[in-house]
Image (cartoon, rainbow, N blue to C red; front, side, top):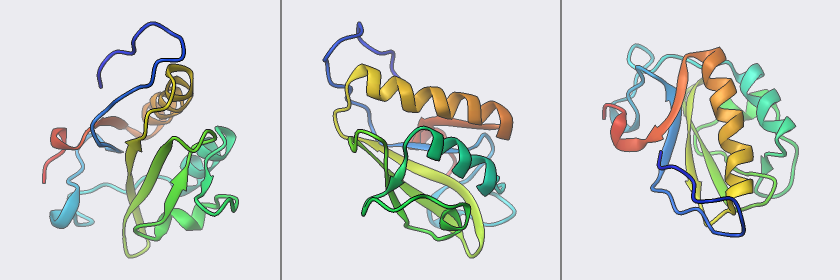
Length: 131
């Protein structure tokens, strides 16, 4: 990830990112053997605490993270998250910022940093993960 500009109203512009296990393969080549499962319970709890919800406004539940393609918004609705899952196997999230402010982006990246430490995962550009 790039570093944030000085705090303020500046919008953050990032390429598409992925939050997944450090050894995960993402995309069409993802399998249970190549993409370690992440805890749906811990992830949902952390994301809910940060105000992440379904694009329709519904509350996020752990089971929602087992459905590939489920779309979520952060509290400010400036970052779109999309679930990466195999059948009943949650292994990550696409993270697509849409010009959040530095403060909005920092709130979400802090969650991913703490969660990543607990799960052996990281937030990084999609190209940093094997395809």
